[in-house]
Length: 380
Ligand SMILES: Cc1cc2nc3c(=O)[nH]c(=O)nc-3n(C[C@H](O)[C@H](O)[C@H](O)COP(=O)(O)OP(=O)(O)OC[C@H]3O[C@@H](n4cnc5c(N)ncnc54)[C@H](O)[C@@H]3O)c2cc1C
Image (cartoon, rainbow, N blue to C red; front, top):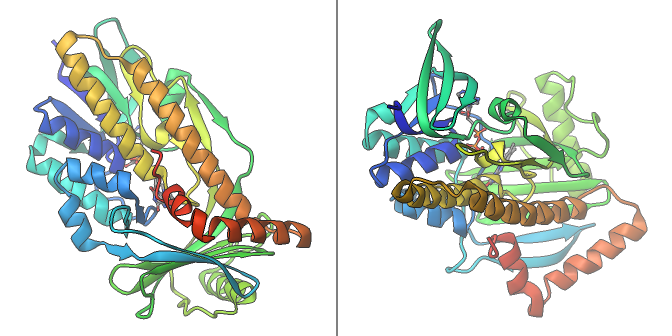
């Protein structure tokens, strides 16, 4: 006897999505999360059409649409000129919803299908796989215990310890960069995103629901902004950095929460063994530039849920098939993000002119719909 059919490690948006999908099928699936409280880090804000379809699949589409801001489109600038403008159609909308809100919707939905399905304050320390089961060693409340399952899904994030425990590789792509980010109140934020692909590096500006705005600024050099500074200096350097590149002086209060993140890309391999699968950021890290990581994780969660439902019927989970699909879409998402990052890297005059020409072409009438499809993950 095993304790559960499926154990999911990690109650991030991706682990919770999979848990909701399995719970709807009546599968005995439980999520183990090491933290007691909610994760209030505002990381993802962009929900693309495949992500919205995943939310629809767990009955949360209407709630997410109601809480989110629907983005009308975006404009790309360089050196004071608009290079391209893209509108998001009714059929391929982009919604903006802070990750803690999205995660809370998923958590509530899961708890509504059984309080036992989410167990917080339970940290998985070790995974052992045998022919007929997986045994997890847990720590929590100072007590060590064991849980067994037919299948374990590690959705434990980009620093996944289960991935390391399985001995999977974590292959990086070249082209990492450092960015500073802040979310501020801004009543005039509107419904359009603005991307400034400037010679000194990218500045992004996104409206947030409830009258806010996210600013993201790429560092010209590693460690040149925000790092090692107190909050007041960090706010003032960010304000100045944005003004120098865009001519806009944003209202960033001195007590604003400013975060610095490194955008890099990795893909794990293998993504599965007989009875353990990696999911979400544990399987692939996609640069936040382009906003695809969570959406991609939800797509994978839907694939994995189908694999589990099918495997349950015939007693064999086709995790190798799941791995093939995940690798294909993750690589495509990483190529898109690498392209977005290249369009916003600090560059000399010749490169800036060449990329301005490329962005103009992508925003021209014959290609505009195709470009909107690229941004909204049409091929995923
Ligand atoms: C600045 C920024 C902006 C972003 N913007 C976007 C965006 O607009 N759109 C988008 O799609 N994506 C975006 N992303 C990416 C998105 O945030 C991630 O892809 C997403 O959080 C991945 O979800 P996850 O559930 O796989 O992992 P996580 O959210 O990292 O969750 C992992 C969970 O596992 C738990 N855990 C870890 N180890 C253990 C253990 N041993 N035992 C038990 N629990 C454990 C953790 O506590 C955590 O709760 C952004 C990322 C960043 C950094």
